[in-house]
Length: 613
Image (cartoon, helix red, strand yellow):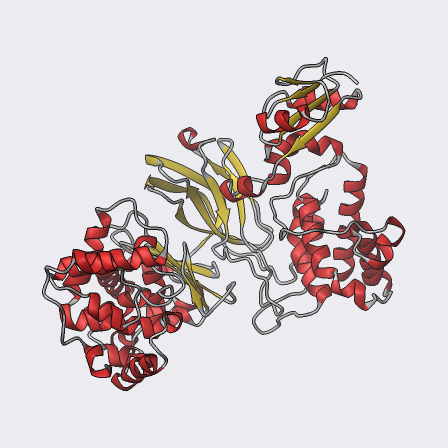
């Protein structure tokens, strides 16, 4: 055997002990075997030729981190290791497996008794096209088959015979069966329908004639009025996160358009997104397809984009990016009801609210609301909604001790089904369709409360340095709910949410004490009572000053105990009172060093928990 060329140091140390003749080297042609990581971008074609001519290749690594940090790119085709491996019929997935020992299947039993991708695909195709029954074992694996079909199709290996066969098989299946026309009134549950919905968009993207397939996939797809050569002004200055730039335009299902992109943002990490519904669903019952948005990396000055499911058009700016005074031009698209504070006039809105897109957006100073268009058809005064949300967002900034102008406008999307919960935080905040009226109805907001949306906006203000998961995950976000309801909407905390009634609050505190003040029970509403007692004694200004103090700190403890002691110290110093006795009464793990540090401050001796001693 010839020389084994080894690039990584750790591999060299291990292989040298095996008795093999190893050299620490990069790739060169006179090696017998080349050992490298999957993270190299050098000599890709030379390595492929080396293997084709009989050379050995030992390559190792994972693609999951790359997949997490390269949104909009395809790990199967774009990850460096796969650019080497794909020609050999191999790919590293962007997924992970639980750690453990996995027994290799016996080849003679693999197809019959376990899961085999090509065999089950063949059986499923015959089930759809010829009506052959599937076994229970086969039905149980249809969900995995759908996932694997999507992964396989994303290889886009159009010059590979087996790939073409899989695409042809799935295309025939979809033409025979069509796609389930899923909706809120017609949800789907069966494994067959789940599989069809999960692969429909992927087949549409890679099949030779997507236009011929489209009528089999989308049954109700009326032609909507369009606008031509619509210019979109780009004015962004992003901070630590990506930012969606609204265009006020929509693409119908399967509709294609070209977008002329300014040269300044080409190959700079920008993307075009079609669709506002970015949650990926994994529910047993689906009211929409599991994934309905598409992203296209901006790699040229003329981009063609589309989405089988249709959707609003966005430009997505990467983090830490500036772009001012440039324009993109969308060749053809459907106009959407789009209101922007300070830009859209009352006369403009009277026409825009009737625009044909099924999705509408209202963009205010610090938040953008995306709702089904039917929710705004009769909205005559978007300026009043803007005033409400501008007040709310200013209050959220005030409590967080951050500038009134958010570094990135929050987004709130109301849709038919989301990935988890009634609402969830993030960018965007996702909520069920019925929440659209909740965020648009000014009178109800000022009289009946809008706890849920403010709760999620509070989640987006939480910071790890003063959060004690899992105790406060669903607790401290409610500081913003209480603050906004009382300071902006004029609704007392006891009326803002049933859990905040005096009776419920007192009962929780008593029960917590009876249970032995166990920190394991200190969470959500129980934990919120601790903060409410602090607020009722020291006011909201104390919280603002505490949050402001944290903005100036660095090198925070990583563990809950350390963080809780830092919070006790920070709050005590802010209000010039020793709070350790109060917090210990709530079961906090206050250290002796913290008590000594605060011993010169007067103690809060008449705190509310004294009554339970």
